[in-house]
Length: 77
Image 1: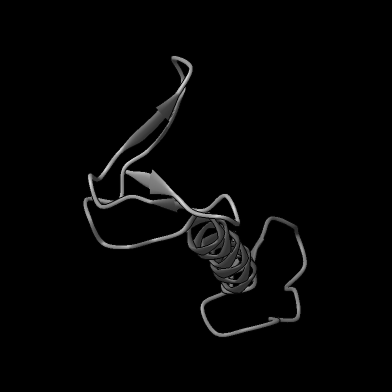
Image 2: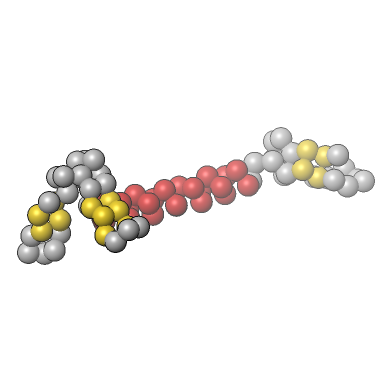
């Protein structure tokens, strides 16, 4: 592992551990810390989008009078 003038590290060896709890191991794939943060941010965004889609799929109504269905698959009991 080598560091250059802009303090970036060449992770050719595949791992870096700072202290006892912070570690990066890209297995030689060449990911930077910025890549990892970007990928994590995209995963969080994708998960939020998926949750929003799932939340809007089916509504279950529990009431005496017939409800107005909001979407295909809504249930009334």
